[in-house]
Length: 575
Image (cartoon, one colour):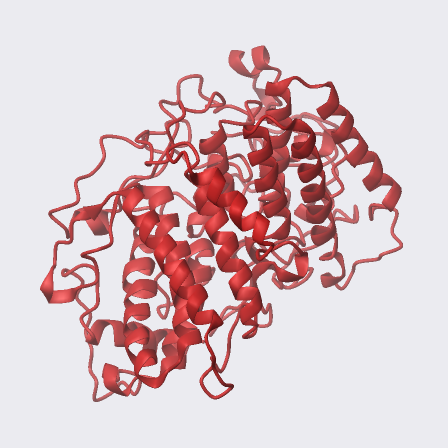
């Protein structure tokens, strides 16, 4: 895989398809067998690189290989757009040293890799591959590349706002491409998806199909469903600025040709067989199941929400290394959990928010906890078996290791049937149909629970007979609790219930969670920042320095409170 990656990056360079002009790369073609000219490139090598870059746009990597577009350092533990979104929606704790100030929580260098991966990886290689595939009649390669470009270009808009597109990747023809409006990029993505559906529907043979296709294994019927589902997602995303968006969304629902069953979910399955050359473990596993223990901090808000409502998914999402947290069942400890000796800030007390520590060993951090990194790698709670391929929590309370649990055989969820049900629930709520909204929401929750629980056996130590594995009765009790809470709630309360369930179901994909939160403003019950005055909520990221420093047509934003085109709501209540 890394050989393919190096090959595809060099093809992009030689073909003069890079987005910027100021990147200097030394190429000695006489010594590099993979530095071939575009006319000698292999379509499948380019294609496989595009598929891998797609998932890494969401997840980054864990080993910072020179063969990828990712480097270490910055305000996040690892890379990928998903991590930013999960931290900003309390699915993972925002706990870097600047976390109490939204203006500086992320800097302009923190997402250079994501920018480079899209322009110098996905888009550049898509252009190069499409030229070759067109000549050789490989329409399915083109269709998948069109889908991937549509997904990632709109995700770039979701995180940055207006971006270069129509003039980007022209090489020496235009070294300073202008930015296009987010709305125009979204419109171009819909056109690409329609073209991809046409290509998926056209005749092909085994000889012209991709040799290795990492998502659906060349099941193009499923790819068409995914393309229609992505269109539904984009229509829903623009419902605040497009009066026809819901009508277009419902037209696809009426067609029935979209993801409705878990078997059709679009996910990337991480192999979990190698830690290097290539590292094919889920990046969250690779960054947390290490010789020095876990690196990420799990979200106190999410763990508390799931623990207090007996959510059946909690032991799959999280693995506890200890059965008690300082300040709860055991005495406070300044060395391992500094805040355990502190008093909750006034706005936490007034709002009734959990502070610092949770019972039963759920050791995480609050949103905006900037207390640094104590020696807690083998103490704090970490990623479980879903989605990262870690350990199922059977109350063993043992230290993790570099090979524990499912060894990183996790998934990156991209489009799930459960999310589709929740999208339909949102539309029903918008159309003032709470009865239908509840039905769709419950359908989505049930699908989410079933999918998450299916990951238990990936952990070799998983015991299906364990009393910690949720029974059908316990699942029904949980669903009944959500149902009765919904019935008792007013309209705002229903949106809050729905918002919590949407974020939980999105766990593992911060793009979906971040978009949902900004689009709806719910739930309002999210734990606020530790600071009472963190500044305006991050509604888009700074443009990366890699873009601003090399393109005269990109001007840096004044701050990160600038909304993207579809986000016409006020800043979320739970700042």
